[in-house]
Image (cartoon, rainbow, N blue to C red):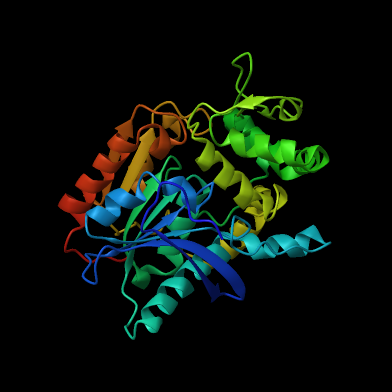
Length: 348
């Protein structure tokens, strides 16, 4: 098991949680720490996607747990010939339960009682972090969501094709859920999988064209050619990400786009956002150049929060803001932790 490049002192750990082998990165500078921060990645990413953030938070005196969510990296990726059964493993509730059980297990192994954690999520990890706070409010001290704004609980399910009529920037989700990307990557073997991972590194063709358009999806032809990373180019980092993705391939991560009807089903057990307000201190980091999740999507989000609870920080970056502008990202997160969260307990 190779160590994550550029993260000295960060441990790779495994646990059995929610019936799955679960992988996470762990960093803690001393026995005394302020709080536990759980970092939840999005798509197509890994716990390693927080590599510019973990050392910063650790230096600030936090215990840091960066997880590989279900289907990614070292965490199990359940499969079933019946896709309707398979996706049951990938719901937001299942992911939230894994995080809860992991935090409880770490505390138990230390002979302690689990304490509420600060949950930080990017992309799909933002949605999982939000739902963690809803399903397990007693385990949530504070919440930071990145790029994906607060997603209200409505008890209604809109078909993705209907959503795209309103939000054409979500058209890529139809492609991602449909199976064409999985099939193309599998056909191309290592080349296809490596190029698939480079999509998360700002991948472009040799002539500078992005391999991803949110109104269309991934350029499947480009996956068979040369894809050039632009967001980060360190060979050791790229090799590490590729080797982690080789464990399961592209199919399990793409289940995030197939599971939305099940998420809507599960959320019928939660109160509607129109009937309650979030009381937890929340930081929303908005990437101003995010093409898949443009800033207008967060308009009116504050109505779901109690007065004074929500903090919004804008950063002039694209979707992978924590990699593109790590100093600005860490400053925004750190200032919020210092001024809003420090010493405070909160619950939904």
